[in-house]
Image 1: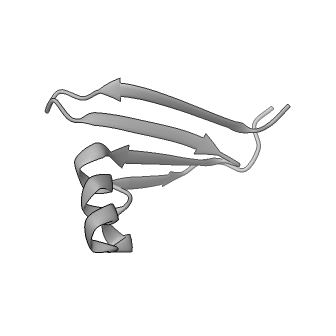
Image 2: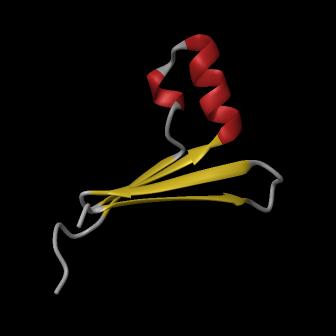
Length: 58
């Protein structure tokens, strides 16, 4: 079973936020920031927040 999931939801600010959980790391994207990344190529704007979770859970 792949260790990856992705959800899309609307945040309080009205921006669409996409979250992806891959191999123990949670990535939270902001749509406006992704749009800026596409237009400017600034990698630092790609992720609003990166949370490192424990590598394994039992």
